[in-house]
Length: 158
Image 1 (cartoon, rainbow, N blue to C red):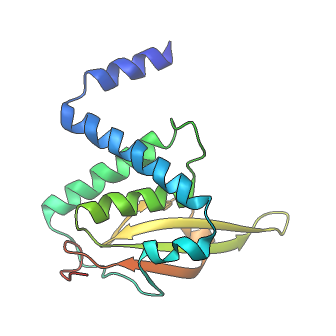
Image 2 (tube, rainbow, N blue to C red):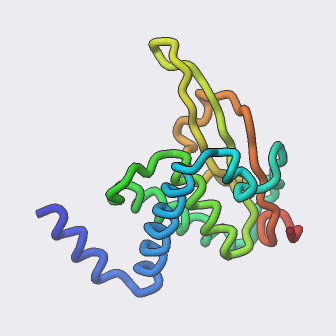
């Protein structure tokens, strides 16, 4: 019954929101495919390695876009038929921002879990805002970062 309610909510959303949620599912799928490819073959798609975009606050319009994209990715990741965890969400969000010429930085971090095993995490930042993976990021040590410098959050063009 809960699924039926969610389908009804989607049907009655405005068209712009529906398209954003569908775009999120599309990029989550693309990101999941990319995750299955050896990392050295996709690293160039993630941006400049060991660089960061600026923390300058984006325009009000860009801030609204950042919030909408973050919500769409984080919501739709719960409904995909495939695994859509931190790296998939970060890549998908980065690609949605890239499409809108908004810069972002993807972070990759590592830590040890309770058993002493190494675990990894990914999160995405644009300007001063963390869009995906922010809940866990403090537990991890950054080992790599990738910057996509585009108009919007940093004033530069690629």
